[in-house]
Image 1: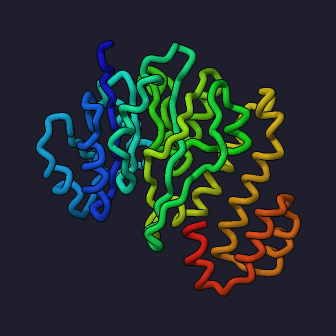
Image 2 (image 1 turned 30 degrees about the vertical axis):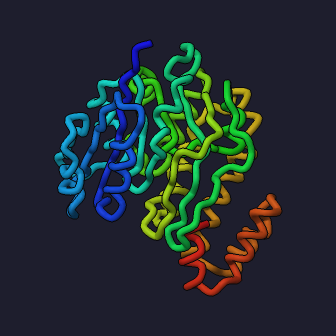
Length: 297
């Protein structure tokens, strides 16, 4: 059977620190029919020079005219893709050499499957330690209900059929939850195929964009949650869960900025026992420890 072309999108803004490892993890893939769409979002460091060290015609460099929102940059990258499938790899993450090769079942799947994703390792930079992301089996099939209850799709594990990512474009207003929003929209009509292997490594470090922009994360999720169709059976079923996810993001943001008695009362009203315990522990920690701990939380 003829191999399918996979377009691999790497968006980058000042990613020089970890970029070379990311790029070589792609170059060393056993599945060779791919192209790399590297979008330099006006980096001011050596990212461009690092990328251009790799002399391979499959590695294609593009630069935005001005710095734009992350998911605007991802949409820009998608327009450059020629593959039948689109994979995403963050500039600080990396893949095992078998990652693309191990997804052949998805490449040859029926029309009802729209995207694939997998388990992965979190690599904690400060401790040089690997930790499995999900200790339970990831769901496959029509999984909207599963994803609204617990979103288990990490960007650097995702492969999407190109025609679908063209149709379900990223919301360019988002900097953090754009892939979440698109996958949830796709999952309303198409199946997802999960893989239980750990062939993706997601780096957790002090410069992670999401961890350093908790207020933005909260506000984007609030905007998203207010614009969903709660007449849909699964959204209606999970409305309380979504509201609690929003409240949790709010409390995390407030813990970093406004630790006071009013916040303590809000935490005490939070319904989930385990998460409430975490929030209470963080509340009573000294501020300098909070600033460190919450980056890896």
